[in-house]
Length: 78
Image (cartoon, rainbow, N blue to C red):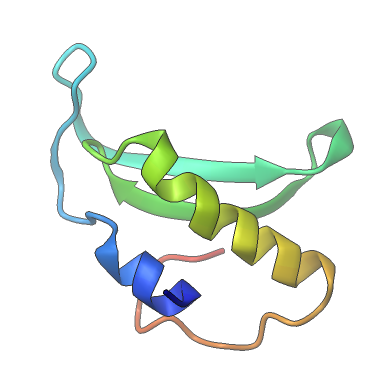
């Protein structure tokens, strides 16, 4: 499964999460040493961190290696 397919499978609609019935979105951030952010993905509140870990790591790896040039169909990838 490629990175665009992984991102497509992530939930993005505003919904209710599992902890304290938090409604909204989650911003998953991958950072380098010293807390410098490399990449982030915005998902619905119900998305589990483990669902986002592999796509986020792939984005970070491609950014660090200077190979991320694709657009992801309107997905929030920063």
